Amino acid sequence: MMRIAWIAAVLEREVAELLRNRLLLLSILGPPIVIVLGPVLLGKLVAGRPLPAGLAASLVAGRPEWALLDPGDLAAAYSFQQFLLFFLMLPAFIPLSIATFSIIGEKQSRTLEAVLATPIRTAELLAGKAIAAAVPGIAGGLIAYLGFAGLVRALYGPALFAIVSAPDWLAATFLLGPAIALLSVVLGVLVSSRVNDPRTAQQVGAVIVVPLVGAVIAQAAGRFLVDATGYGLAAGAVLLIALAGLRAGSWLFAREAILTRWR
Image 1: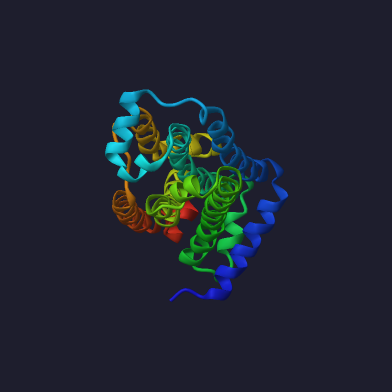
Image 2: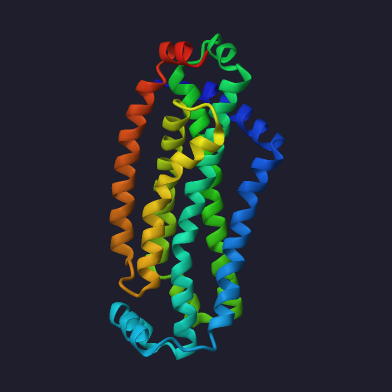
């Protein structure tokens, strides 16, 4: 059984290191601002330009409740829907950045041996690092979504606010987002165990974003719109993959393996 006090000590240390790294802080705080303001500004630009008839018909067929929107609001709703998946990239990139810098930083600064000289268990060390990486990503995604939804309510009114607070948005933000954050941490841990450069680790770990990009392209073409059930199922699948990765990560980071491979 893991000891909470030791995990808390690792977490406190990781937070202190994060606050000292200004570049990493900028990479965490910058994207949420862009993702919140981007769709709001784009919605204003497209609201006065109705969608092509074929695309509009395809969207209404997939989402019958959108038939009540006027052409301008339908165009704005369509633009908002494309950015939903960008909100899922926050819990993918932020934990990956933190995890890779944290773990590889230990390797480069050669402080890991000193940490392992303490009575801390390997699982406790990794648990503290995982929490320190996952929480900012999950919080960033949720705060960005709440800020975005608030701006939509204030600037566009209840009709479009109902779109961005529909079950599909809630399922994506509150179910799939945290699952992606956990998987991102797992990938960061696994990849960082094999490479020594944070940028290389991030590039390899960013494979998690490929399915999201594919979904963005498919939705932009009007081929489909993922509903709440789809996001819920995706969250379950991602969570299962992450849990499997955790088992692999525990094996890779056995104490003996760390001492021999990270010297």
